Length: 106
Image (tube, rainbow, N blue to C red; front, side, top):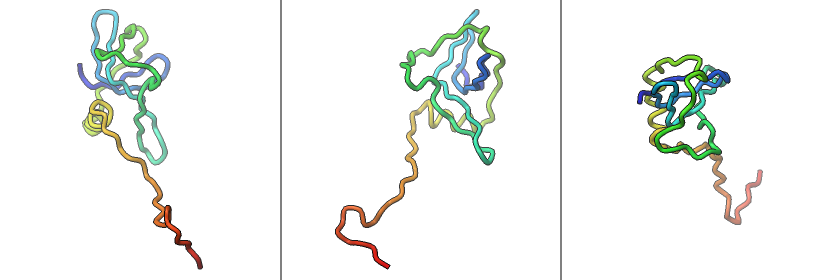
């Protein structure tokens, strides 16, 4: 399997490990590509509410519009974050007074 960007007939663009066998395509560790503000690209798990088979999900090749190679940086980021399950902590505002009896006054 190779890391590819797959555009489905539904319009979804996913990055995944991809392989074609006959009339079906197998996608493994799929993530949806979501363009955001300032030219950034977000990755979100595809079908996060479903259990994904370990050997991938088979879809009819007729559901694939096209397949392209991702840029190296995107492929590396996908492999690190999605395939290797790296969890990136979100930003959290820290309240230094939380849990204490100190009060902030002006």
